[in-house]
Length: 638
Image (cartoon, rainbow, N blue to C red; front, top):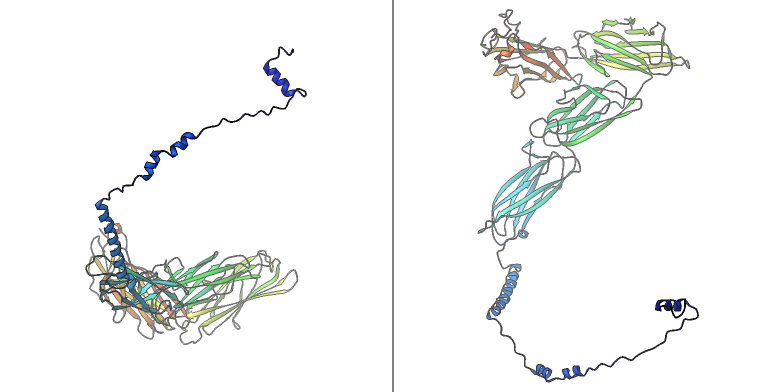
């Protein structure tokens, strides 16, 4: 492109990118125009400024109200300082809870179940009297009334009257604390009061801590260390009161492990086969509970039983008692013997069995081979001994041979095909029966001992194997319990329709009689329950006998106490009679309603150290023991 025809842009571009046409820019500078400040200087030295600086300043006038307010504020501040100083220096009758002290004197630890007494003193260090003063006590959980240990204490309020200035008031506070050893109980004391000329109520609190030192009860659990799986065994629990105060409504609860099933207990449980009401325990007294059951498990398994002793809430026997005083646990190992030898008497297991005199006792022996090898020539021998054993009553079964001279029964055990061998896992049952002599009252030792011996030879190593087990049958008291219902005769003048009619009251006499052949019995009693639409007439003829009726449970209790040996045989039987009434409803038409059911005698045999029970059949309107009774007199009519 010609130089002449280039635009200004093109020329500029050529200059920027050319290596030869580039020239350093010229350093051209120009001077700054001077600015005059003459006007400003003249203003600073003007007459107007001099006049302003030399002019006299005039103060604004003050408001009179503000003067008064300021003076009042100063005076009020001075008065406040004076009053505060006067109060703090003790020159006034002002009331403060800081001047009220609650002093408590008493033990800081106590045995659970023992009565504890705290001396509470209220010191009034104020300069004025305390009027309408009250002391409130908030008791910790599980506190009982020392006058009645079955009644719980939660709160009490005591009137202290007027507490003079500089004076004091004293009040003793008594209580029974329950809890486990080491537990800390907080007792809260509060004083509330008024002063003259004021409706305000003032408070002062204090907490006193008491530590439970030891439990009032001791708990001892006895049971086998090892049992065979499925074997019935007995666990004995002994509860003893160590404190000096009577403890009411004592309860025992058991927690069973997996695989255990309770069969029965003595005394009977009040709930779910694991809760027992032990009643009131006096100082030094003890109660024993025996539990029989089976434990099933694998070889070398261990099972733990837990037991808790406490008191029920309130006066009722509550199975879910929360107050636990002492607890214990027992661990039992399960083992599997080479040969299982399970013996039962009349269907009951255990190491010992109690039977009345002269009663036939059916004995069953179940055998099982738990070895991995076969046993050859298996045999079972039973040896019986005891002064009260009736040798003539022994009757073996399943091919057993009895030797009357030495009182032994022998069995040669055969398998299902008649071969004398016992294969792994094989099992079988054999049995026999026996009885004691009828009159065992003159014999001192009333035990019958049975020794069971199983023997065989191992097929693998040809070594002999022997298993021995001993059982004891105790011959206890033979108690006779009879119950009769009468209408036409007896100790009462009975009224009403026979046969009974709907809506009409008919009265009956109930006669109970108890006898005992041998062994003295303690804690003997008979309980019975009235039937539907049957009422207690509150009349009984019993001489010195103790008969009570519980309306809430509809239960009659005859407390015999001790029942000596020979009652009803060498001496007259114990008897009692009471009157009841039946008012049938239309739902009972055509039936013979039950008058009394659940008639059970229970006692503790001192010679056996074991509880015994005897039952009688229920009594209905079919009073066949009444000489005037005829067929049909028992059926309810419209």
